Length: 216
Image (cartoon, rainbow, N blue to C red; front, side, top):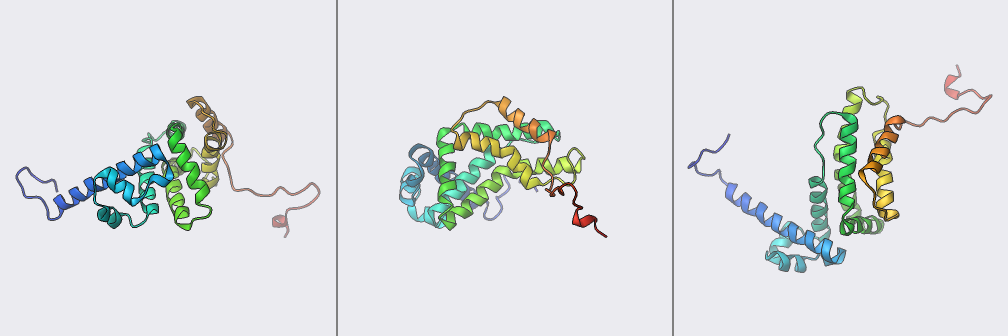
């Protein structure tokens, strides 16, 4: 129910608003440190000093540096999404292009590259990576599932492989080849996918041999 003017706030509302403001200030400071100075600058001490929030408060909300990095990167991914319109190709292009624009920030691309490398050896950062990757691909997955439901994509489509087919070329170009590219490249990647969407793989029997599943 909407609160009328002059009506007392619900219990906890003002406290919750202050907590959210504090969290926003801390995460903004952590983001600036991350993008301006790099991965190792995001410590409780530096974030507290940059945000003006007590270090004990920072620790209370984010017990580890990995927790801070997780919320900064998840928030960054959440803010970059497009808004689906219900039309498959335009939605896929818009969402993939949102990732292109995000990766266009050199500092952020560098942060993601470091996350990929360090997550191989650090279980906490592996957890962060899984969560961030899930958020990055969330809207794209929904567009694909909607496309299946609407009959625009095959019912047997492998969504995981489809995401890899759509985002893999973009991540390769930016993170591995350090290449900047324009929206036309994104549209070409989407069109390539739509011309041959990834279906569950099934081995093709060699000539002269019958598939075992055909045997009676």
